[in-house]
Length: 247
Image (cartoon, helix red, strand yellow):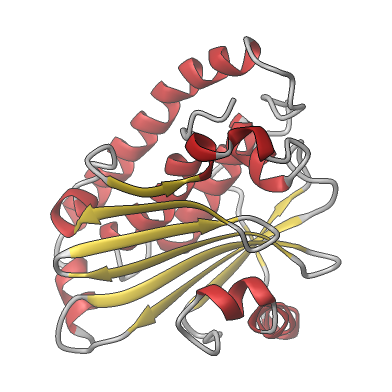
């Protein structure tokens, strides 16, 4: 068992606490975000009756999973922005989030861990949303984590950088997502150019998009050996983008 896994698996109570904290934060902030959405231009990405329950997770396995990962490896968004050449099937979860108001067809959530060191906290994490039929990347979140700094970048379906934030490891592992340094945010600099028909915008604006994202994180990490820190990373990719103030 690696050092990262050993350290994280020791704090089961902290894992539960982080789960409750992030769920509370997500749902308490949802109502203010929805109110903001109602007062802005309609982006057709509000709450629907088809919200995904965290306990109803549809995993993609076997040959279908492998085909999805091989297609993802050859996408320009992955190749140009992730410092790895391949994706390990063994350390990756693929979940079918189904169809909802943030996309036309079924969307898959791919969450993969890269453990760079067996001796210290040094790992990367990607969370990618992929269109099931075409296998095209719709959104990619990339975390680079060490014992001091967590670097987070979020890319849209064109591979364009939408958000770049930096957290201290301590803040990030404790769920203090507001204590970040923002290096770049497209919604502050060129918000008039954001394509409001894009998956990234609809996902960021849609409550159902965030619920689906959260469910994928629960399915990927909440009960796994990597525990609270990886769960925090996955949900941060949901809550940070979803609360970006675009709507």
